[in-house]
Image (cartoon, rainbow, N blue to C red; front, side):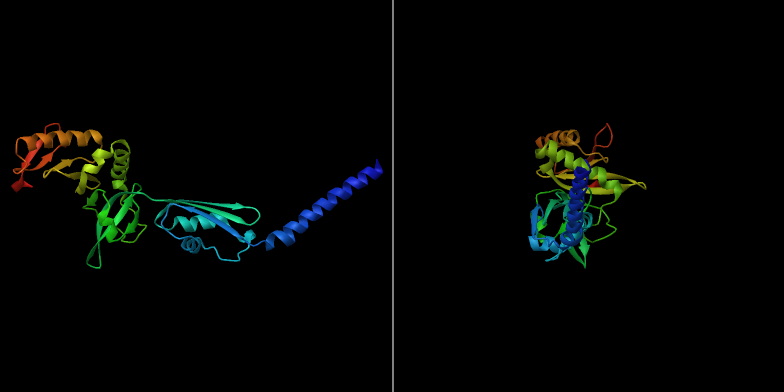
Amino acid sequence: MRKVLIKVIFIFSFILAGQLVFKVFIVPNIILKKIKVESEVSLTDGEIRTIAGIESGQYYYNIFPEEIKARLEKYPEVRKASVEKIFPDKLQLYLYAREAIAVSVLKINEKSVPVAIDSEGIIFNSGKDLKNWDLPVITGVRFQSLELGAQLPEALRPLLEDLKKLRENDLALFNLLSEIRVERRGERGYDLVLFLSSYPVQARIGNKLDGHVLTNIIMVFDVLKQQKLTDRIGEVDFRTKEIIYRLREEV
């Protein structure tokens, strides 16, 4: 029994010594060799590595996924990032892109610049190419910051959520929205003025936008069109139970 116990102690000591040597002398010197990138964002692998702060020849032991994740998620077009270390020398990156729900136009250096906005109110893209995006244009909004990554006021977040739900539930109605003008009402409230494609009349509603509201607007606009009144009526107010018609001179 004594000899067996000595052998067991010797084996365990040998294993522990091997693990100690491996962790102290081998693991810290393992070089990161493989970086696999899966991305929805329109960036090259090299650009993603630069944003992530990953350098060639970096030690695997010195890779910290949470820090890389934080750097990637600071990039305006990245909605979410996932970073995973796979032993012994691999790093896996997943990048999920923001999806535009609307566009707006900002004044930058006296020039009008289209910007893309997602359902969280983040401005994540800009440029002339956005003019070709078939999305509603939000106007009447003042931005506290003009930089990519800036966010719309908290009060407008429900509008963006409504737009997201509308596109998911009824794409045909969503595609009818041409412009949404935000008009302030009181200190925190606002009304929405909607411009629909194929109808030369604007609709004024409260701050709630959904399929039921748009269907009601279209029914009224169709009646005006059939009666050839769209040349005279400039706005229809749907904020109360009694619909109010305003002539073009009054709008």
